[in-house]
Image 1 (cartoon, rainbow, N blue to C red):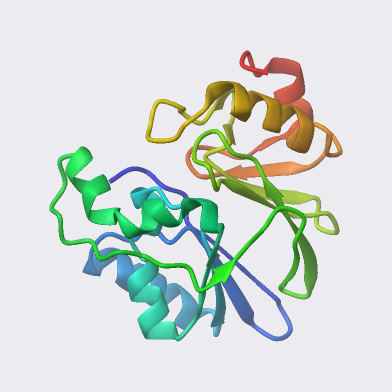
Image 2 (image 1 turned 90 degrees about the vertical axis):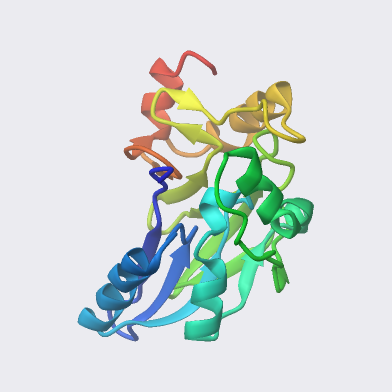
Length: 203
């Protein structure tokens, strides 16, 4: 209902897969995920949240329970996961969303492995205190959550948002990546670092 981009990436040889920001909100959407994994012979081994706003964590509980994976996110957003039901009320949604607690704390500068590739964790707060970007330099891609969008940036009027902090983080952490880096945002279409440097009015 929020138009969230949920990403699944996998190793073509091992078929091990990582899901980023599972936003499934109902049984029909959960079935789409299950069918996709099954049809492609994938084994889900990781769950990463770029941040803990409710639209990006709707499916966390389902994925964790069904596929026995641990939730990876920044502990700086722990208060948001714990108050998932409150976030729902803020948007006028039914308050049946359980609290989401990360099992693994992803910190700025951490290196993790995704699909056989080294991935760097970049903390870029402002949209939320624990907003992170997952950058895979070998593949030339980054998953940016709600930090930056095509021609726009994440909103900063939510709890603990900070506009200047977000702008500074984008300039220091994202726009210093190679121009060819493809940015996969939490909403909307992919873009590149070069395109955003040239035409994003916010930065």
